[in-house]
Length: 81
Image (cartoon, rainbow, N blue to C red; front, side, top):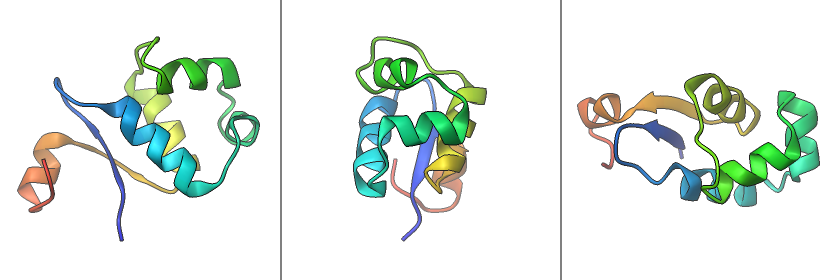
């Protein structure tokens, strides 16, 4: 199964990240080591207390073995919206 982090104007990226982190079994400390993003910042992204930019999302997606796509790309490929 292929997992996506979708970037669009309306999305629940926090939920996507939270689910991906839980499914990966990685700790925030491991993500911090793999991405160079402070574990506190990752925690704030997941809780929706901090905005996430494309560069950060790309690093997290790579560490979590996910594809980062824009919502329009998912629609074009027949994926869920």
